[in-house]
Length: 216
Length: 109
Image (cartoon, rainbow over all chains, first blue to last red; front, side):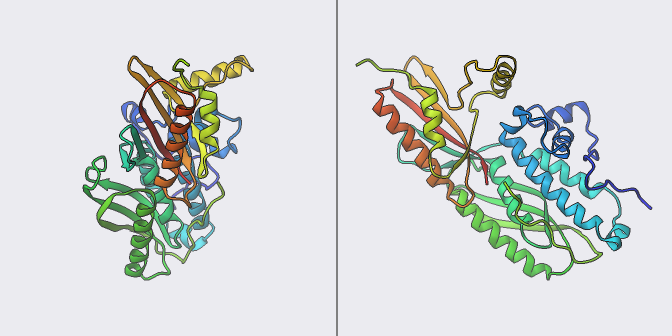
């Protein structure tokens, strides 16, 4: 039987090269360091983490992932059906990459001297959280395809999800699409041509509830 | 009355007070923020690094505020309030010409 990473253990499933590690760092930190920080109850306080919105987004995603993993591992049936840690590793990889600020998504203001923007990282973070709050879903990758920096340019949102048993998948996908659409309208003025949802992983053991809203 | 550079401490307080702003992040470089934190660690009580960035240029000033916002509110509404609050303050203190007021939503919720 495969050994699995316990839910209270720091994540170390991502094995990146030096260049990738540098690129993947979050305000100078790696996802492993953030996982350690979480594991230690965010103590001792590290302002370089706490003062970074990118780290905050990644930490929230890590918390939700841990909670989902804990629920899964609490299930003996699921423990036996889990194949390997690659599922966790792939989600960790996308959390690292998608927490970066990325491009500027412009918001309108009548003053010519005003420049109001939402970072791509902030938007991806809340879209991921929107999906993770739904029962039976955990978001893997979330990508904004198209020129988000040019107002009124149609873009496509691509979301990869893991689905847990207990729900009709087409209905679940439709609910997720509606939730994502509402979030996009709440936080941006983007013209969304399509929201493409791909179920990339089906967890097959028992019905579980993925993490609900976390405390701030 | 001559034109002034706005007080970054006042700008920090103004932005923090805007409804919907949950967090004010350092708008300068990450390196500057880390150095500021390190300075505070070795010399408590030293001047705290300002979070709102005021970039003075020959032709005027550029202001940047980086915020985390309440997920229950529309981002454009919160950003507009932050912008308008800064603009009103700059007008009030007779600041140098404003080239740009940049409000960045770096985190939602």
